[in-house]
Length: 337
Image (cartoon, rainbow, N blue to C red; front, top):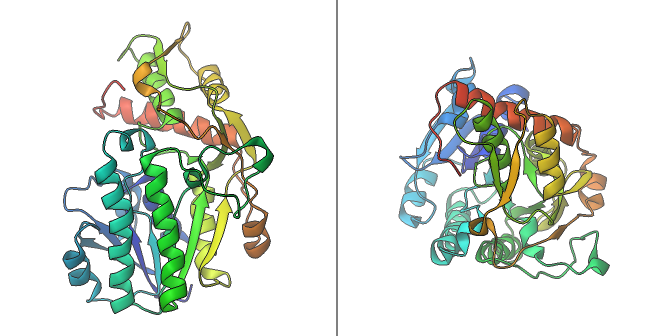
């Protein structure tokens, strides 16, 4: 990215958005525009806002479902780079709230792209889809390639299929420079506690200091996931927009280590200081159907950009556990979930 480029990040207060801001502050001189809702918690931005570079961050307030609000904000700027990360991102809740999920992820994405088309038509745009679009993949389609047919297994996955297709549509119909990513499981510090590996880590950290009993509640432990570190993910996203971007290109991105959810849990338990942890299946944590074989072929993206993951999964999971230990010991109030 050139010096003083303007980068817009939607969903800037999430795990990925906040780590992306950290990365851009460290590695670029960009002006950063963080699109958030007025009520968005800023906890994940503590490091960025406490840095000497925080003056480079400007907040824009809008909900992506509000096209008028987006126009009002985007009309004031011409962005060079855009990372559209904002989403209802929890697959489990999408079964109970399909309308909100579809509205946020499909209509919201259309609103963002339409507003950018009007006010920043030359921007290089990252549209964040998801590996969940592939859903229930037969074994003969593994590892999953970009051309693997979609078989979404949740309203969230269906909404992300819409997001994915919108990204390609705006490239083909209007010549916008959109890049679509299908990132496989990525985690680390700041991961929301509704996601499996993060709720495991949080429950373990709570048990260690006596905030809950020693029972770790779990869902489906048999699903296979390929793990990447969120800090590797944002480095990939930076390269996506800066290394010869191709209009309408779609990429699988993911780590090197494939594990069952149960194996992730076993590793986290092995790092606990708490003796006698027990595992109990909670029916409320089970999805009606699950995307249970998420192993990607990421050769297209790696060949195009030279990116490869640098952080081992053991470090990622230990950092996640230590994140929750720190948060709980410094008074963060959490739900027992």
